[in-house]
Each structure stands twice: as C-alpha cells, then as structure tokens.
Image (tube, rainbow, N blue to C red; front, top):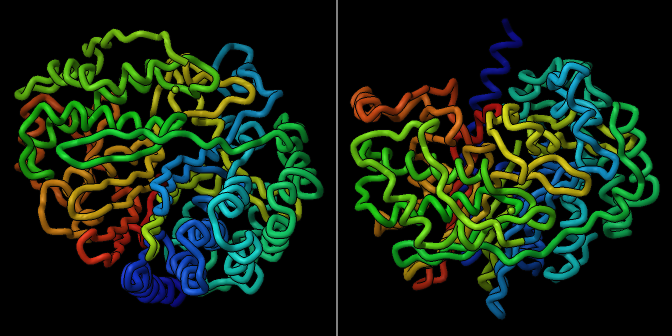
Length: 561
C-alpha cells in the first residue's frame, strides 16, 4: 500500500514538472522547442545557447529522446525530419525510414497452412528492420549543423552515462510492458529495476548506450553501421530469428526528398513525402475539405466532413501507396486538386458513406508511394519538425548485445496480405507489400504551416491517428485569428481510417449530443480506452519574431500508440 501511495505521489509531482518544463521552459526569446520530455527540450536549448542552430538542436533533442524515452524512439529506429533553412528557403525531408533486410521473405511470417504467425512482425528478430536514426543524426549534423556531431550528442551521452530520474510516464509504460520486457532479449537489464518496472524517481543509467553514442560521435554513421556495433546488431537480431546481414547495415543511406507542398485556404503547407502516407493523406483530406464551408472544428457537422475526407484518404492509402523508390505510385494524380474535388463530390453532407460501399476513384498508375515528435525554431528562422519511431512500445524487445540499442519492430508496417491488418488495424495492398530493401509506409506527418501571421511547426505520435491529429490542429489554427497553441494541443480528438469502419473518439471532450448527431448520420462511434497522441507545436510570429511552444498535456499519460 505504501508503494502504491508513493507511486501516486511521484506521478502527481512529475506530471506537474513535465507540464511546466515541456512548455514554459521550451521557449527563449526568438527560439522555441517542444518535445515529449523536458530533458530533451533542455538538451536542445543547451545547444542553442552555445551558438548552435535549429539543426544542431534537433540532433541533440532526438538523441536525448533516445535515452529518456526509449520506448518510443532511439538509435534502433528511424523517422522523418522536415527541415527549413532560413538563409535560402531550402526545404527538404530527410527520410531515415527503416528498410527491410535483403534476406527477408514473406514466407517467414506465415505457417504451413498460410496463417500469419502470431507476433512475428512485432516481436523478435523477424520484426526488426534496418534502422535509420543514427544515419540521420550524422547526416543532419554534417550537412546542416554548425556543430560537430560530438558536440550535439554530448547531452544525450551525459544523460545515458549519469542516468536520469524515471518519470511517471516511463514508469507506467514499463509496468504496461513489464512482462514483455522480462521476456525480451536484454530488455530487462536495460529498462527494469531488479526485473520489475521502476517507480518514478528511479535513476536509470545506460552506460552501454552512452558508449554507442560515443562511437557514433567519433566515427559518424560508420561508427554505428560497421564495426563492433554493427556486428552486435546482426548477431542479436539473427539469434532472435532474424535474417540480417552486415551488408544490410553497411549499405543503409538516408534519402533527401522533396516534401509535399500545397495550399489550403491561403496557408502554405509543407509536409512529409512518401514513404510517409501521412503527408499524402493530409494533403488529400484538406483538398477535399476545401469544397465545404466548415464551422467549429469540434462541431458535429464539421466532424462529419472531416471523417468522410479521412475515409477516402485512407482508402487511397490502402489501394495505391507504398515506397515510390520500389513501386509505381500515382502521386501527382492523388494530389491533384481536381481529383480531390471529385472525391469530395461523393461526400453526402447528411449521411455517412459505408467504407465497404465506397467506390475507388480511378487514377493512373503511370508514375514512378510508438513514436515521438519534436518541433524546433531558432532565432534565425531555421526550423525542424521531426517524427521518430521504433513502432510499438519498446519495439521488437531486443537490446543488441552490449550496445544498449533497442531494435524497432517496423516490419509490422508492411502489408503481408490484404486481409492481414497491422498493429494499428491498417490494411494495405500490393504497393506496400514486403520486399527486400523496401521502406514500409508510415503515418508520421511532420508539418509546417505558413500564413500571414507566421509559421507553425507541428507533428505527433499515434500510429494511424497521427494524420487526424495534425489535420484537426491545422483546421483549428486556421479557423481562429488568435494564436492559441494550448488549444491546438488540448482539443479533443476523433479519428477514422477507412477500415475498420468506425469513428474513434477520446473518452473525454465529446458530449452525448455530439455523439448522437454523428450517429444520426450513420457513423458507428467507438470510445477509446484512453486519450491518444503527444503533439508538439512551436510557432514563430512574422510580426514580432517571438517564438512560443506548447506540449500536449496527454504526454504524461501516453497510451499504447
């Protein structure tokens, strides 16, 4: 009983600390950082104060999150980095998405009777894809930063070696996944306290991860993708049933891609390109919504149109999207304004369209388709929106040897078969089918929104729900003349993803009348067990140059996604 009371007390105290530091301490005159953990935010500000730019700060924040939020991101994962360089307006998406190993085959995930093997894509060696996070840190530091990689990684190395006090969020996630960690490879030693989930306040030290960061700092990407670390990664994955080869790591490269750009009601929006399906879905949804006069973002009538737009965007995801370096994706057609208007014309203002009855819009195929987020703006106007992941909480449950690196379970993001959904209940088609060297689709949607008032940098974790979170925040930002970042991260959330055909809503924030109005239009509504997402937003005013930040209050009570 005393232990439980102590846990509750620490939970309350740390919730207050998180609420204060992740927001109030995240802004400093003309620069701002919003991240999922106050220590990561502090790492970024440490770099800015020493003269680094937003890109240096982003490297520091990402590395720090790998230490203090290991269940969401890390060197064993990947992500998308959306960058804007103020000096010349250069915008780019650094694609550090994980890739399938060369030796992978679809047969590894099915039994003799053709049934999917339970947990094969989410746990163990077959679940792990080749990570891209370390390559991204090295690439961004070298090409865009002012500081050396060694300087920008210094805060993370310090946190890993000296330790940090576990917060209530870490303690709750570790309790949720305690058995998983106990049964994993090296995970109990790395993340538990005496084989039990630690209580808030426990000092978690990761000296082996610190040593790996030091190798990365000295040797750049080669310090991770070859030599001792690479050997340990291959050995650990293959001992757990994987099929990695040293060449899979040695050949990994980040890819610089042109981001998706479009306009919506006078705002210029820049977002993630493929293999992010999130950026495509965001562009398509807003393109459809331009046809309608929308009221308050949270109103039932507006929600109906948003739901129907999401339904159609997620249908296109299932039909057409995949890694455009490997399969042809009709991207220009899918993003065409005329296509969006044709799709919008099929939306009935008075009634839901059943997903099973929704016809696919014909388009040409002639063209070559758990997580964390942080946002950074520096005093010079450089900015970063980065969404990073290892997929589900604590990834594949493998810590590689003595490296401290926790491996992802991103192989679950491929489509094994049309009737086999992934952990987020998403179904896919041939475009996202598993193949050697291929990058799986992702819902990560780091985004910039620019209008006459300034620039908004945002993104969120949440699996397939990322798209609806970012969409709702943009609609609310553009609806209200006054800038209220707190409202953007606080507002209640709903979601639809074509299949399963239902509207998911958070357990708070929706009245019985709202639900009745949605159901009267024919929508099936399901209330989630808990709130979702952990949005991180920064804004820089064009008029004053002042930057501000806001972090999602849900961050202290993060759920499965």
